[in-house]
Amino acid sequence: MYKEGDKDAEEYLLEIVVYEALRLFQDRLVNENHRAQFEDILREQLKMQWNKAGLLQDCKRHVFVPVPKVVASPHVSLLHKQGVEEWTDVVKKGIVQYGE
Image (cartoon, rainbow, N blue to C red):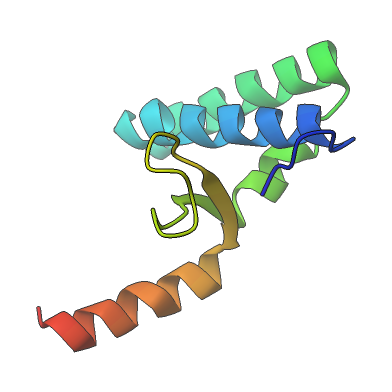
């Protein structure tokens, strides 16, 4: 989670933007060829603009999930970076607990 004054704030924000681009745009593409083209475009922009071509692969191993309101301020939504495997376990436990 980003903390004020964090020296990695730019990279953290960039990860969130890439993650959202993948979810908002790539998830809507209908075939593998178009998804691959989208990734190539995104990777090239990351390389040209921020010298972070490898960030795309890193973003595919994580999800950003909201921090519970108990921890965060009721007026601010915070995001927590979580590994895909860990998030999958949380979802599976929720399905078992609350039923299908």
